[in-house]
Image (cartoon, rainbow, N blue to C red; front, top):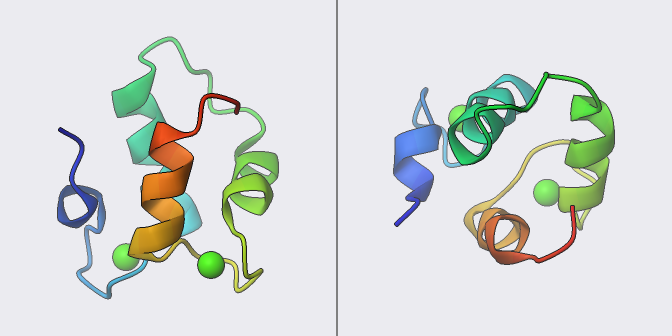
Length: 65
Ligand SMILES: [Ca+2]
Ligand SMILES: [Ca+2]
């Protein structure tokens, strides 16, 4: 099970762009690091530039990304 806290490296309760990058590598080892900004924009529902736990769960379990 993917846990939010595991990817929130600095413990601020949000997944930042760089934390998202680590997350993606975990989810998909073949992920090249491209389109990070696009992914973030896609996952960031409220547009604050970070993922809160709710957005994180939606992103991880969303079939399309
Ligand atoms: Ca964080
Ligand atoms: Ca957000």
